Amino acid sequence: MTATAPSAAERTQADGRVELPADAVPSGPYANEDLLPVPLAQRKWTTYNFAALWVGMAHNIASWTLASGLVALGMDWKQAVLTIALANVIVLVPMLLTGHAGPKYGIPFPVFARAAFGIRGANLPALVRAAVACAWFGIQTWIGGSGIFLLAGKLFGDWWSGAGLVGGYPWTQWLSFVIFWAIQIAIIVRGMETVRRFENWAAPFVIVGAIALLVWISVKAGGFGTLLDQPSALGWGSGFWKVFFPSLMGMIGFWSTLSLNIPDFTRYASTQKAQLWGQSLGLPTTMTAFALLSVLVTSGSQAVYHTAIWDPVALAAKLDNWAGILFALVTVLVATLSVNIAANTVSPAFDLSNIAPRLISFRTGALITAFAGVIIFPWKLISSPEAYIFTWLGTVGGMLGTVAGILIADYWIIRRTKLDLEDLYKAGGRYWYDGGWNWRALVAFVVGGVLAIGGSYSNVVKGVKQGPFPADGLIPFLKPLADYGWAVGLAASLIVFYLLTLLAPDSKSAEDVTESIKA
Image (cartoon, rainbow, N blue to C red; front, side, top):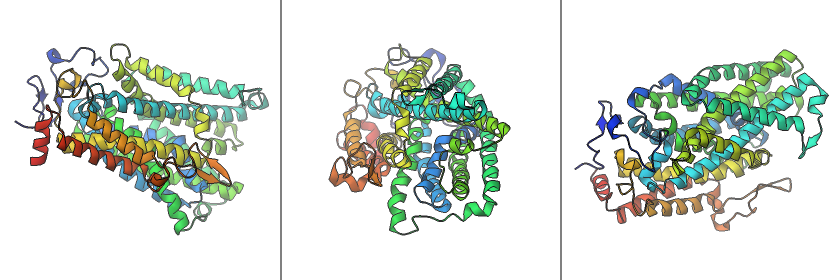
């Protein structure tokens, strides 16, 4: 018998993709229409769709501020682009590994996680991922709303930008926040096909907008060469490496969310090659190119305004042409909508649906995400480059790297990509473990999480602590690991989970472990 023998009802295509016939579709408390495997006939996404998805998600204000934030921290354009390019090549690896299950089985991330964590235990990584997505949704919505507020102020004048304060911000800024929030909901409730069509045309539009901003700042700076001449404040010595490694983990942490839930998208792939090539061409290339645009524009702002303006909205607000401001406003809207809908609404909608499939649909999960994103005070999470890159992204990356390690160990090393599709929805089956929970995954999650973020600390910049953690770390002796949180979490949880499964296998998974050792 091979590891994880498929059920008699499963049909495997020549290209390895699996589906369940209509008369074998799972039902019961752990299934609903949004969580069920996507039928082969509905798996239509091509290489272009995945590449466009990544172009749309990469070309947004938050990823712009990642790159420009590195310049604000003292890097020159070469150092910033190198950091981001390396980070995206690294994060592409777990992205492709976890994404493999999508085209093969047509399942979303929370169902995929059931194989490792158990039918009920999968709610743990799903909730972790959903919580991060809710925070990201709030951050991106605040950024988009701020873009509307600032640029609309240039068009409407003082009555808009100088409106009375409510909670420390003009009431017109809160109105902008609500408008942007509502636009996103209007798109997402129409379903995944609408998301695919939106991403297809949004991607090239945002590229044009970013290039236009580069041309404008180049002219203001007196030529393109000026943008390349801005020196590094860190050099290439020890000062650079102290910033490089936590920045690298922060850059990885930025997309570590998608490295987990990418099956939410790859489940719609027409072939395995479509997601493989689409992601490989889409993620590292577009992120690196966009990073180059970002750091060049930020370097130009240094030359023109004698300070690094790392927020593209604030920079665009310096335009004195109403047509240019209007174009910048539309670009900000499209760019932020593109990433927030795809990365921060679709996935938590599935994650929340997994908690109570009979009560929470995809649309209900999206609405919960949208409301949660409002109450996490997103404006505080992006208060500075240091808090944003080191504290927020570093911590998030450490936790999500821990989950990724467990999923990769289970799917690739133990099960050799073989899953029982029916049992992923069935109590008492192969993935039920102990009452629906796999204690091995829970132990690995705790161990990896403690090692990854236990030493998290807040930088002190000009005497001001940047972040909520103690300056000497939560657990001081783990502080040396904090700058490598994502890598530490992934490696530690992968090793611990595999060893626990090898030494104390579940009775129904024993043959999977045996086959893994033989292989």
